Image 1 (cartoon, rainbow, N blue to C red):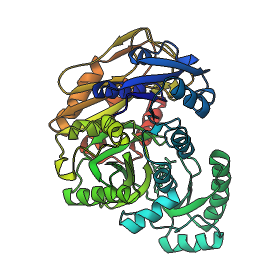
Image 2: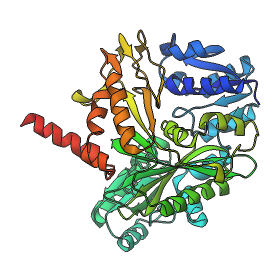
Image 3: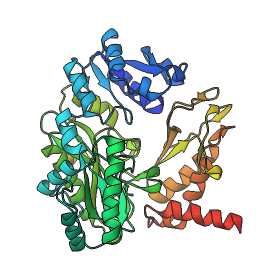
Image 4: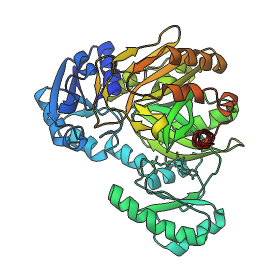
Length: 454
Ligand code: ADP
């Protein structure tokens, strides 16, 4: 095992990794920006190193400063968390070249799965279900038009290097497709430095279904079942749960096993999530693979008993996965809500500033992963998520009630948060029935805005 790990991240995920290190007897070194000076999670680290000013480009994204911090602190490995440099294959390569273990996949596996066109090709070969569409990035627009006619409109144009929902265009006929390809190419070139785009079938009313997988450096790979993350606003997940409600167990097993096969074939080590959309007949279509630990990993930890972060560190250190597929079982139900410092009544405006009151919920099955507390000043520079409330219960109905109770106990002020919004969403009839799709939150927000004006 490593003696010392450097954490190239901040906030709740830095704290989550520190906790995992502690249990493994590993020292944790945390880098931070001057905007995060005094951040509560830093008190829990064995050592902290300031790597620059507030803007991420000057600190958390600055590769040479992170490597220098790892050198001066004599760390053996670097944990990227999620966001920032976590899916940057160049960073993983620099870590390796500088003699540090990157806690995550090899740059080769990251490239094989992180590029959407490569990933889809590998998925087709390994039997993971994908959307019908162009086999490769589009060279010839007429060829793309032909494919679109075959798979039938609507279709979606997507960037091979895509992320954060950028570089995507929905097309409902040939004229829209021709315009969409041009627009998506330009947007992708500007956002990712890679204008490669492809076309696939667009699914109207889907659910978001993602499979947690883990691999090691000895050729093993397993899945830890799935999460449903259909509660989204602007492609940002708000509520995540495991298992996905109402899915046929045989179909679930088949798609989860196909995800494990995909990452095994990619020689993947660490935690990866294979994301799918599911139609109302429970057909699955792969969206992409996230080659890192995800925000919503705790719901899977709660239902499987596997510590994903600790296991990720252990496999990076060269250990074999400490479990096989037959050791993994679903126990009960878990739901996570993201506590964002945003004002849902004012267009989800981010809320920087001082948290004056903070009363955390508790009780059986309640887990809170957060770096916030009374006296913490939220800096304006980063993501608005200040924590995640996760609840575990024997069944989904109990889990929803338990989560509502925990949300009512949770008091944060004067900064506004998504707590009141979650209380409403958990009572939405579609959510309660488990029949919600990825658009229900936005539909409901629009309806309530109209009702408030009337
Ligand atoms: P990104 O990497 O930018 O997040 P994804 O491939 O995950 O891109 O797609 C982002 C979102 O766009 C999905 O969560 C889904 O809501 C929508 N989307 C993408 N592809 C399709 C598709 N083929 N049909 C319907 N919706 C899609």
